[in-house]
Image 1 (cartoon, rainbow, N blue to C red):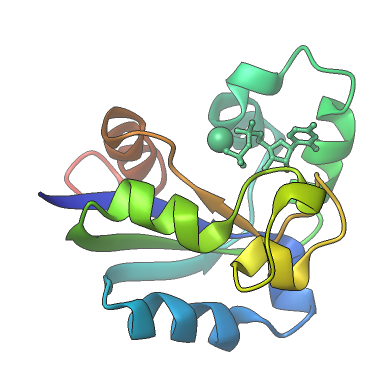
Image 2 (image 1 turned 135 degrees about the horizontal axis):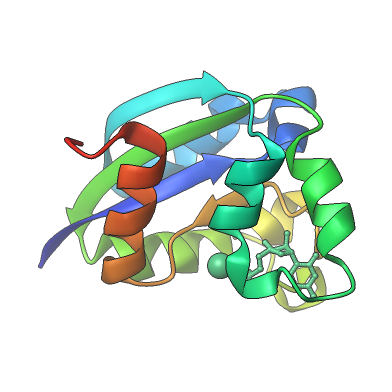
Length: 136
Ligand code: UDP
Ligand code: MG
């Protein structure tokens, strides 16, 4: 089923010049990037976006990391793109992310794991509206 998801390249992806590499993987898989922008997150946006981990001991580190430089936000469309992008990204824990996945190839940290992707169709729509506005 045709879906859309919210993808966000985290500040270290930009610092490490991995934006092109990650876009290439999304495009060569066959998904379509229909909107994209570079911007810097505020503490408030990080708290909203990561509300489900706000009480975890690692949250202050995540907040500092996510506000440490610009991110690239994207709307990506395609059949089953929510799950498809999660597979392309690899799991959260870097040691579980297989080579060939984005996290498996580029991350040795659970926190600084290069990329965000929505975890459900419902959350994708909430996140798209959060970062691209209510009309997106
Ligand atoms: N995170 C972390 N340590 C953990 C779990 C999560 O630093 O043990 C960070 C990591 O940056 C992750 C983010 O919190 O991407 C959001 O966590 P979530 O469980 O939603 O993982 P994701 O959906 O990004 O795979
Ligand atoms: Mg998540």
